[in-house]
Image (tube, rainbow over all chains, first blue to last red; front, side, top):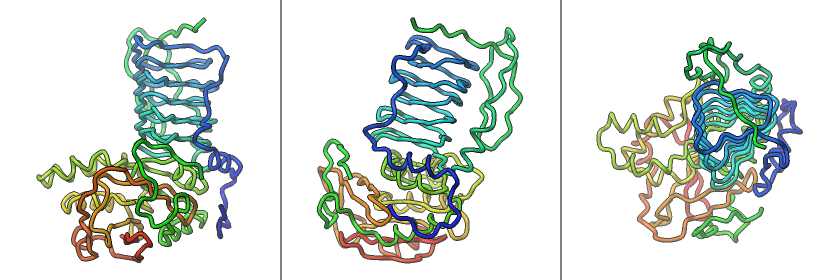
Length: 186
Length: 207
């Protein structure tokens, strides 16, 4: 595609071009063969979920999900009502909340997403249900993803859902809450 | 461009072009030209998010907002209470944010809203716009009948759009005239209008 004018081009054109030319039928898949934790279909979690390994959610999660250096997959049975911060995010199931993927966000054809997506690479398959926004301005994406995710609160006996942080707004003070332990799949 | 498999859809049934050629839409091209300026824009798409649209817009500095209004059309058209209709219209749009909307893509959705629903939706859109917001719409004008449900519009490039109409029954087209639209959308003025090869009227409205 040719572009006319546009003397003030976004700096990160390479990443933009990659997203622009990626065919639908090769939407990125979650890394295969890597160990990952699994939240099974019968598991329901309310709270601040964080970790340092890849995660597959087939159950229900409400609150906040932070996997800063890892990938999150919301499986076909997964239902997530949370703000999600991860390196890569793959959505096959239900997602309500904001998605911050520092590397990429892939919305598959079976996905139902209601929320705002911020990531340098966003792919969307035909058939996906999506309502919300996709931030495509590299400058805005860089600013959003370079900010740290909400700091975890110290563990406390009381368990309450985490407040939602919206793009462009300062993080609200986190209430004290426990973090559930997620067992790795073996 | 590779075909997008959709059950029961017919390609370019009334586009007046061979499949894959797309329909030249000069006013859509002028909108894309505007995005080429290099500035930041907020683009509101009233239809469902399509990979082709995501691919096109990902070249530009923009936030792409998606309403998927087709899901709410029946509800909007059935509502008779004006206050509830305004509430429904606002709820049918994405969450409102601080930035005003710069460009609105209606595709053919205007044709499927009755007059009160159309007025309510466009009023909601105007409330999140700014002076100079541009609204692109395709209105059935020459044809008396149109598909039962909205078609899918797939930008092939900056100038051409491929139309994938749902197969099945047709229904009477409202054939909104410029005067009808002016009554339903009093805050908007017609910036430009073109009659396209497929008989649709392409409009660019300005807030």
